[in-house]
Image (tube, helix red, strand yellow):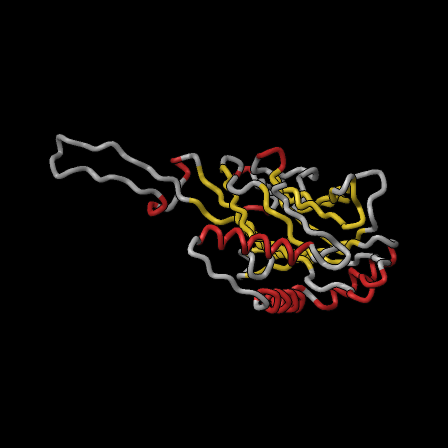
Length: 282
């Protein structure tokens, strides 16, 4: 697992971060928090999505997984890629998937075969949170903190599909796990579509979290669903484009420039008028 924890993204009220489950590659936890759920100044998750990465077929059971997580600052999008590595040499069907050293011209000398495992991408996802928020609400201090999270998952259908003999207890791709004694009102739904001539499956997940009522959460969810993933992404990307244009700094040290950009990103994600500045390294 590379970058097992990603710094959060958010809109000042709703925040999301990603971490590996128990440091492994079988599942990721996508934590969702709210600005009004605090403990000694720390924001607490109201729950998390468990994204299952393991294959659902016995044919893929021998494969090892490698997960890459990265954070795209310019549009505040969290990106994940899951790669499968086949660790059984005799099951590799395509010769080009292995690099081998050939025998030398001298038949009496043979070099040992050196094999390099090749990975294949079996799942990818992108996630962002609505960039806008209710400024009039923030000005009054009566914060319901409505916010929506948008996630799109694409996976290799042959990797995740269940065989006819598989048990009904097979793990779902995604499940919501509430946290705490009084979780905030939360609503979510997903839509599954076959793409690329049915070779891949696309799952679009939209979730809404508020601090008022389940009815408000459902209403917020329906509004987000009506807008759709692509339209909401364009709105979010435009908000961040205007945000980054407000300041520019050039430094002799690219490392310092990187730190500056990361802190500006955190400022944009968390420090709206009803939130506070958060440095996740503190």
